[in-house]
Structures are given as structure tokens and as C-alpha cells.
Image 1: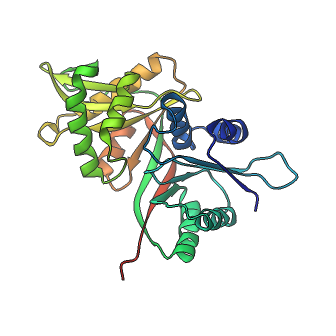
Image 2 (image 1 turned 180 degrees about the vertical axis):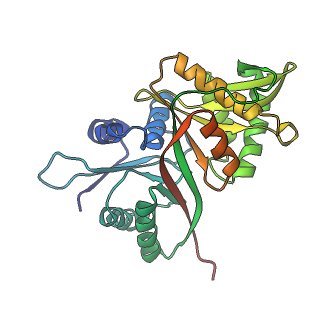
Length: 286
């Protein structure tokens, strides 16, 4: 089977990142995760070692599909045919790889999930459909709320940790170890706060720049501050800062189940690129 697996980030980068970078926007999750591993080490997301892989048929140098798995997150896949996705499920299941889920284009995620269920008996459930947006012409929020933006620093760590925990409780997705995530983002000035009368009222995060692009997120406003446009202002501010820094592509994901956020980001100038689906895997308790 022409799936090659590796725990070596340099080998994966040398072999598969050409494919991943060729469609950088759609592969932002894989690119961003690999960049974090380079910056923070292979334990950046947790103690379990990441796994990388690429599809390269015998006798050819062409890599046509790739994946990256950084526990505790779902397996992240590039575009590929249903047959190649099903073959990957077979390879990983035969090795006893534990997977919490898969994140991919809907047809790819569906094919992988169906094969994984058949091979392992795991329950496969759709947990989220998301839409990837890319910034076109940035527009300020209307009406523009009072306040100003400020890049967060180490003194904001406790607030950012509390807000990150609240965000993940609401979204029911992502790494539960928010301390690790907050420390990582603070290390490269990856949070922007929106303040009103000197008090933080919203936050927008930003990934590291890789392949000329960054991704906005998470964006969080505590319940008592919602309805004033602060989240839109924080998103606008961090998007403008990225553009001012010379970033070519500014991206973000939205939950398709939240029409409010999808409409907001479109008003700011974001345009839809593609959709992805996350299927979660769990043991059958019957």
C-alpha cells in the first residue's frame, strides 16, 4: 500500500509539504500544526507523538495526498479520493492507532469515517461542519463600537486562560489543555484584545504565519459583553494588523451552525473558500 508513515517532521516536510503548500489555504490546518511543531517541538500539542503520512504510489516521485495527526486533535487530511482515504483507515487501524476523529472535506471525511467504523467498530458521528473564509477587502464593522485594540501580553495570561476555557466549553471542540495553547500564542504575540474604557471585552487569536498566510481564531466575547460588536472589532483589528504586517492571505473558520458569525465575517470582507467536516469517533458501549 503506497501510504508512507513517519514520526519525523523533517521527512514529512521534505516529502509532502510541497503538496500541502500548493493549496495552502485549504490545507491551513496541516500547515499551521506543522509550523507549531517546528517552533515548539513535537510535544507542542501533548505527550503523544505526532504521526505524519503521504500517499506516493510505487515507481513515482509524485505525492498526491497527505495527513497529519497531532493528538488530542482529530486526524487532518488533504483532499484525496475516497479509495485512498479508505486505504489510510485500513493502515492506521491495522497499527492500532487511536483516533478521536477526522477533519477533512466532507467526501473524504465520510469515506474515512465509514471505513474506520467498519474496521474498528467505533461509533462515527458528525460533530461539526465548518467553512473556511479568506479575507478580501477588509471593511470596518458597522456600527463601529467604542474602544481600541491592544496586543495581549504575559500580564493577560489569567484572563486569556479563563476566556479560552469558556470558549472551549461553548464550542465543545479543540484541546482541553488551554494553558499550553495560551502560552504558545503569547510567545509570538498571537492574541489581540478589544478594550472598552480600559477593560478587555473581547479577544481574537492568530496563528503563526506560514506559507504567507495566518488564520484568525479563536474569537471570544464573554456573555455579558455580547451584542455590542466587540467580537467584530477584535476580528477587524487583528485582520488589519496581519495585512499591515504583509501577510498575503488571512483566513478563518466558522461553525456553519452559527449563522450570526458567518454573516459577521462576510460583512468584514471575508469570502468563502471551502467547507470541512469533523467526524468524532467513540467506542460503542452496547
